[in-house]
Length: 504
Image (cartoon, rainbow, N blue to C red; front, top):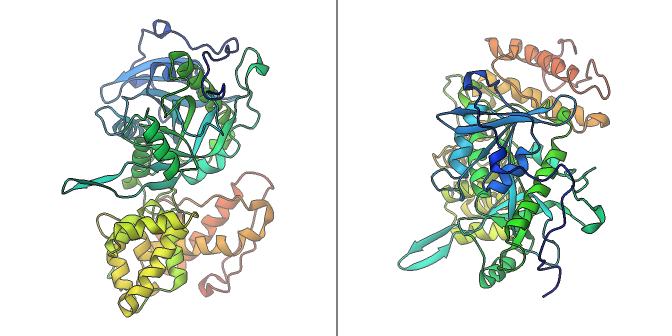
C-alpha cells in the first residue's frame, strides 16, 4: 500500500495550534442574560477533537448555559472587529436525538446567526486526489442513502444533490486564499484545500471496501463522506440559512489510512484553521442577514436555485387572485427552474413523475437548474393541453412543495396580483434590466425587502411603485463604496406610472 494511502503519524502542528485538553476549558458560566445576541457565526462540531480545535481559535471566549441548548461557548474570530461566534457540539448522526438536525434548528432560532459552519474531520473517498489532512469544503451536498423498503426489497429513491447556499458558494471559492497550514515545519507536508467538492452524507459510518467501491462508482466526483452534514443542510434549508461543511480527511471510507486519534485531531485542526481563514475578514459578512423568523417578514425577493438563505415572497394582501388560462411558456418554466431549488423533486412527484424518471433527470443533467427545467419541459410535452397554469399552480402550492411564491409569480394574472407583489417585481425587473450594464456592480446582491420599506404602506399601485423605486435608489446608495453611487439611470418606459418619478 502506498504512502499516499496510509501513514503512521501526522506532522507536528505549529506552536500555538495544539488544541487544549478538556480540563483546560472554563468551569464558570456567564449568565445567559448577559450574552449579547444575535451572533454572527455558529460552529457545529461532534467529536472532542473537533470542538477543541475550534475552541482554540476563539478570542475572549466564555461559556454560558441555557436550558434549550445546554452549554454554548462564545468568542470572536477575525481581525479588527471579530465576528461573534458560538461554538456547540451535537451527537453523532443527523436524525438521532441530539444529532445535527435538531441541534442546528434549536440553536439557530435562539442564537440567530448569519451562517452555520459544520467543522471537524471526515472520511475521504478519492485516494488519487486527496491525502490525509487535506481539507474538504463542501460545495455540493449529496444525500446518498435515501431508500424504500417494500415487499422485502430495498430500493434506492435516488440521491439528493444540492449546492450550498448562494452567498456561501461565493465565499468558499477563495477559502484557501492566503491560508498557510499551521505546521511546525511547512515543508513537512503539502495540505490541499478542496474548495469545489461534492460531499456525501448519510446515516451510515462507512468503513468497508465493498461499500467504498460502490460509492466511488455511483459518485465519482465525491471527495468525502460523513454522517452529520445532511442534518446541517436539512435544518439550514428549513430555516432558510446559509450553511457549509468544512472537514479534514482523517481516514478513508475503505477502512485504511489514518482513523487514529492523532489523525482525527490533525484533520480537525486543519479544518478549523481554514474556517478561521474564511472568517478573517468580517467585512464579507456585513451584508449577510441574521436569521429571522419567517413570521417577521412581509415580502422579499425570490430565492435563487438551491439558495435557502433568501426568504421567499409570500402574498400578504387578501385578494381574489385569478389563475391564468392556457399553458405556461417555456420561459416561465425556466423561471421556476431557476428558483425552485431542492423542491424540484417534490414538484415532479405532484406532476405525476415516477422516481426512475426523476432520477434520470437528476443523473443526465449536471447543471442544477437544468434538472427541473428539463422535467417541466417533458411535463408540458407529455400532457399537451392538460399542462395548464392551474395544474402547475396546484402542484406548486401542495403541502409537500409549498412554493406559493412561484405560483403567484407565474400562474396569476398581473391585474389580480397583490400590490406588494407588484412593488418587488418592479424593483427586481429594474435590477435585471439596468444594473447589469454597470460593470462594477456585477456582484450586486439581491435586494432584501421587508415591512419597513415604504413601498408597502400605500393603497394605490402608482404610489407604491414610486415609493418602491425610491427605496431602490436608497438601497443602491448604501452599497459598498466601490464605486460611490448616488443615482441610477433606470429605463422607465415599461412602467408608465413611474415616468415622472425622480431617479433619486
